[in-house]
Image (cartoon, rainbow, N blue to C red; front, side):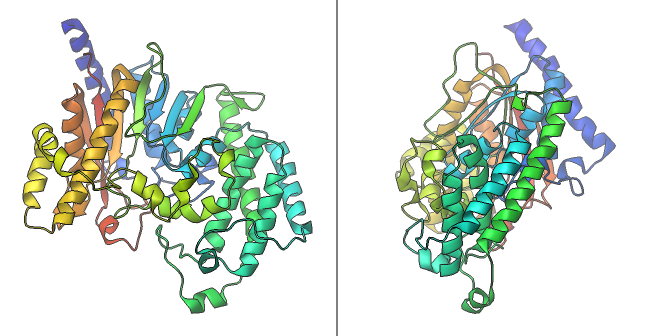
Length: 453
């Protein structure tokens, strides 16, 4: 064990050196102020708080070079699939999961066969079918539909939806559902300036004239072009065989608090790259709210036949099921969390004079984050590298040092600290109308290694 620990210490030093080398060339490297473009599959859909692809790519490159046998990447909070796409760019196997059906669909749409010619033909057929559709029936019905969509918008969205459903290939339907999701985002009555559902002013709604069919045609064409561009990159790197990715990719809908992927003893993951929520979604980034309207128009069974449709019972249900979404029984978790994280204990002491809901909000989130760590650790192989990208939010005027809290909770489980990198987030699109999210302008890249025990 001593020899193993010594070898890991040398490997950790190598990884730290590679990560800090980026800053020796450019002290502001990790902020990616002028190099955070989203190309290829990264640009299919505007998902909240997406990671910077170039940052994830550099983190993977440094880890791979320091650990040449690393091959399988895991993201328990897969989101828009940034880690997935960057792993594919390097020919790596990938497993991921997310509690949000929209995130899972987006990830699955990024690993379809790269049949750009066929997709272009299918796009023309779907648009033609929608244009020739004369039915006046509306394809979805939910509470608040008339609030969020004008009648003419509903009519055209329904025609596009029927046209997509007529496509026989599941992989193609998934690709076009993403284009429809972006169309819904752009043509609903919700403001696009925030990820929360905020109704536009009546005068704005009355003055807007948008054609979902025209928007869908434009987005679908763009996404086919983006897929074609990624296909070229993957082909040149030797990662495709007749348009299909050579690696293994699995993405599932799951609650990371309770679920870990099914892995054999010899198939555990080598690298974790993830960005969990910074706090409960209701007060930070409302991923579920952002996904609520698009998911109303998408066939959920095309994402996963096992999806619980009650996740759309309200605009807040997905967020309620996410980390910190429920504040029940927070008192029972406080003692254990305090014992294992001095940073959290100090934070709670600093909030003792704040309204009680501030403390319960922090405890609920940290309790759920803590619960998610056991499945994560179980999924990783011994000595695996774990990279967590997260921000330190403010609650009750106090900074919650999530980077230190997470590190302490993982070290308590036998992990070894490698390094923490700091970065500004000038380009990360947050919920601009959310005062809590607006206070977060920096992120930490926390790098640890799973212990040998």
